[in-house]
Length: 348
Image 1 (tube, rainbow, N blue to C red):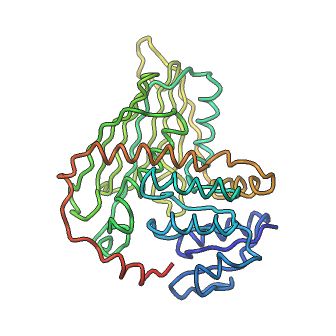
Image 2: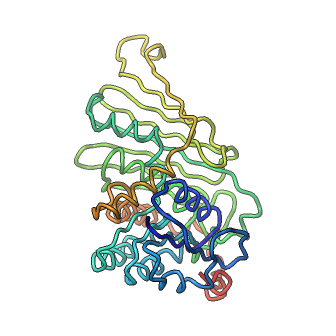
């Protein structure tokens, strides 16, 4: 039984605690959150109480983004295994710093790239790896949600706390799936803009990614001006295609998770749909799969297979390129948030 401490007990901390308890492989023995929490778990008075507890083997970090890097390094340096939510940090350089602590500690470090663990994504991955449909030619991903005026009061709307806007909040998952299903990208062109909300962080990202060696291209649109929630990823290969529309989530706002698979058709009428096979996934097993991968890596003393720090580095390298390729004049020059006061308020 692996004893767990959780830092940050909002929505994600509670989801992780439930998955840990249901796995029967770990036990939550202490949690910390700056806000009063009605919970059966022991509540620590500080992050240090969690990190320095000799009875805690692993720490789950479920905090606002700006705390992910320092808390991860602190936990690793104190000999704890770490599971951290996305984003791993603000930049690829930050992830490099984290990886130095990971290497020195020889502890397991895993990141919450949860979408990789959905059954539909696992099905797509297995078909791509089998080469039954040939190599990936191009991918298209759309991930959007709607927010309201309350978002102005959320830490996610403050660049110094979040690191970025919709790209690092939601688009990061789609980019991670591109890397997981298609491979690396070395050529990036993007527009990062505020089309509507005019906050410190972007509300829309349009990006074209290319692998110069293979010619594979991916198109991403990540947005918080999608007035109905939407998730869609399309993979077109030499001998077929896979289209996933919808995603089973705790909010149930992205519709049914339905995967369409078909072999390519090059003779008229190519646009008929009789040959398509559709699979709908009615339950979300991703949280359990993710927890099991983390615990197995600890028990077997092996590297993380899905959601490693190398995966995090690859992802943040692409995100750095997207932000760098966009015109900074497209984003408003607003007054910076008082980070010191924000840290006092969060006290994580």
